[in-house]
Image (cartoon, rainbow, N blue to C red):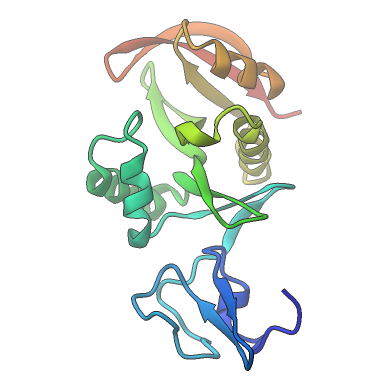
Amino acid sequence: MSDLPFPESLCHRCAAPPRYIRTDRSVFVRCPLVAEKYPRQPMLRCALFRPAVITTERLVLRELAPADEPFVASMTDSVTDAADWLRRCFDRYARDGYAFWLALARDSGEPVGQIGLLSQTVHGVVEPEVSYHLHARHRGHGYAAEGAAAVRDWAFAHGHDHVIALIREDNVASQAVARKLGMTPGDHATHLGIEHVVWRVARR
């Protein structure tokens, strides 16, 4: 949308992202993170401001926010307790500087899933794992591979010399994503009580 008012507003740089509502006389910013229907503009300070961590051709990855709980709760095949899931992600942000990030479609701003980097202990060693959960209605569009590749590159750029992926032997789709990331399968590890294959790729 062209000719947006208040270009200095954080809303124009937030990876929430905001929605714009045009009337005959003006354009309003609708922020999905704040309770106000139309926050006062320009918004130069915002405790809920979420910059993009990673941007790809089709995706924006940003930190999760409390306002994302309804979407997280809708991922019923991945999340059983949305509040606890968010709390653990926020703890990881504070401890590691990364965790699952919310993945949004750049063209619509609609959340499509969660993709990120997790510190996982495998055989007593802390490993950086590229992980993702796509909402059921957004699978099959290549978002997992696109986002996971960007997370792999982010990890390498931030000092990690390798990344792994923990994948069940029957998860053929995730194995295909791992191969696209240049990963190869290795040893086995028990994760969340289930045996997984440890796929990995080293930084070149």
